[in-house]
Length: 421
Image (cartoon, rainbow, N blue to C red):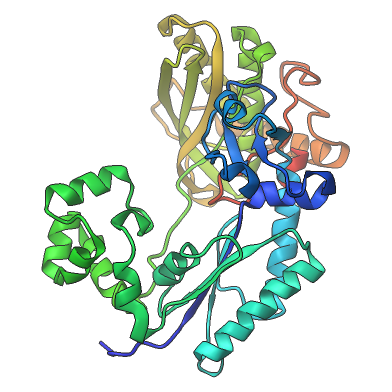
């Protein structure tokens, strides 16, 4: 391996992104402690906090009731995910004017591969300054970012976390080992509390020890090939990224107090399924496994799946959901629900799906499937033309079941079309 790996990656990480967008859109919120929440209830948790709120110890995941106790002046702002997606696309477009975006890693993070004529320390510092200035001037002055530059994408991400907010950290070859030794094992992406405990049980309690592991030891400590890959990447090796593919499609919703009774919660579950089914068809996929998850007010949880012949039409999927819901009602003691989720798994390309011949419980004729799918596509077109829930199946979705649009799981950026579904 090259003893002096060149700087190859720039990692751009927006600071307190959702909260910063709200402060950009609402100048009266600037400089004030705010928490962004999914719904108007103290029982939910913050999905983002401004740096003014973080100064009080409030962070993503802090219950709103607790956040209010930590900061009396806290302002709770309802999430507006469509705005976050719009700003995301504007920021990507701005970055592209300075350097090509190689990978969109999340709603607030992108990675850019550097060429040989732009990767000296002086050049990347100037490039980072131009990107920050461009975002401030052309997208929003309140949108701050931290940028990391390093020989590979993993190290660049680590570097972007080393100085927040509004930081720039360059991990070049001469400083790499020394700077990494200043960190904790938990600063490595993917190393959570459970992994830290596992490492500690093997005598690995600091970064210096991690960096001293040889490839065989690293693989043994981590328990898989990732340990060996990490060994080389922490030394600057720019290993190729492993290809990934979408494995699930789903939606989840935290229920407001007025939607927690079984009949109201069921309508929300049906609404989530309809949104997920539209995405399934847009992606030209089918699903062979549906999972319904329901969490009660008392923190109990029910989660079960049902297999089906690979399908993508709303009618077949709704019938499976109805069976799962009936089962949940019979098995779950709690009858006030805090959250519902619908997830499609075992995805396959629509072009590869074939009807099962002998599964009488879930199979349908080719003609029936064609009619259901044709009608589902027609519903998609009407709702896309006239707005979300213009046409529904089996209930009036106006009011109680109408949602505020798709939610963002950070690693998945919704298409803007989803906000009209």
